[in-house]
Length: 120
Image (cartoon, rainbow, N blue to C red; front, side, top):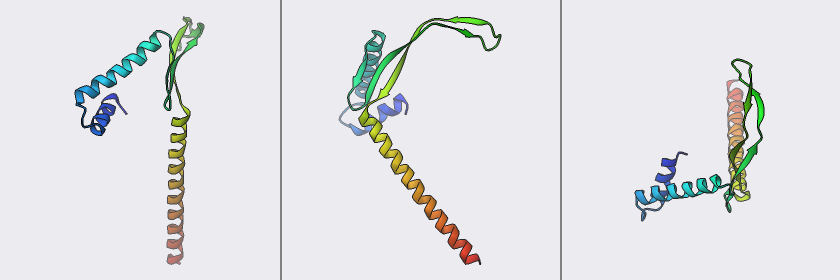
């Protein structure tokens, strides 16, 4: 899902809000999450997940083209960790998809076996 798709989805579900208001709200939320991360804070949205920073220590790497050793400085990289509620929803959706897939396989298997029997 892209940012504009998210904005459109929210605007469709909340017709009392103008598209411009939705765009501003999404922009504000993303700005504030970004600002908190830039300041080194962790952002927790209960039921959804948390955003934070991980420190990557400096190291000596290799230039893949030349094989030359290169110093790679320390960095802080953002990460997202989904909350339990989100993980549970994803697991349930995957289980439903798996069950649907298994049922379709059974239908096709039974259909194929009936076709083989009727051909004999």
